[in-house]
Length: 377
Image 1 (cartoon, one colour):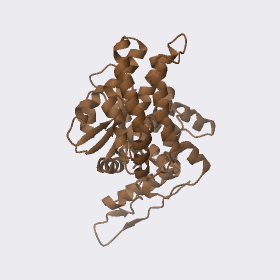
Image 2: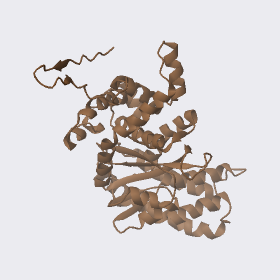
Image 3: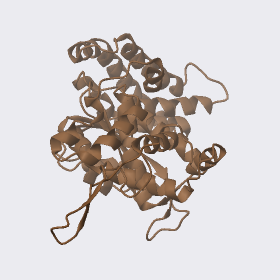
Image 4: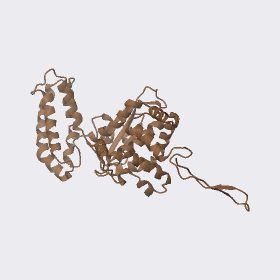
């Protein structure tokens, strides 16, 4: 139990006004939640996918009565509290010239102008330097092309995405170069193979899948921390000839397969995305696929299976902010509970931009534990 003793004084020579010592700044003023308890609740929900109603039951079993309404209000206010950190993270992402994007569905019951059964979207960006990765989540009721355009306003550099047409508008900006995702192309050929009664090694689906396997074999042979110059040279020497052969095969195979079949869809996806797919050859810092962003979506997807939906737009925005901090901390090998506890204790006292910057996840000393490394890996 933490007790705050606030002394009161009155001056008999003045007007008799009572003066009380101010309370220390709290993460949520006029509430009984401490930084540690608040971090515990948020980690349970957003890192461990434990819905608030289950947490309420857990607290009850140990004799602590915290209504779910209080838990929900605390989570929303915590999401609002960290907004200055989110704003800085957005600036940092836009400063670096490589960013990946993806989106997934989320249901918000009380979305103005939409029915409770309708779908909204959580957009994910991953960027920043390799040694200071940043992961940012944004809620929006729409999946239209205006959303990535708004989120990437002022950005210059590479944008890596899947083949969703909603990225075409922002990708056509003169200062943005689109990069494709070979994982999606491989997935489509894999689906075509599974749809065949016999996996014939002479089939187009088999050939396409094997071509992409060769490209991934080159990437795996490169060391994880290989310098960009090394990656660029190896790709030019080994991957580029395979891609040239693959392009010649694709031109021959396209007219031979009906576009409505699974194989035809895989071939046409490869053809339509080709200029973006081969872009990773141009810069050794680029990845062959967008899997890092897809991996950042998984924690939310796991959580969604448990708590199913967000009640309000405020809750959805708060969830996006808190996921951003937790997943960025994990990407930087920072234990998320200790990180959030420190943020909730120190952020209310921050007076300057420098004070807030000192609380960004990558400014914290990495936590060298097997648990954190396995979670990040």
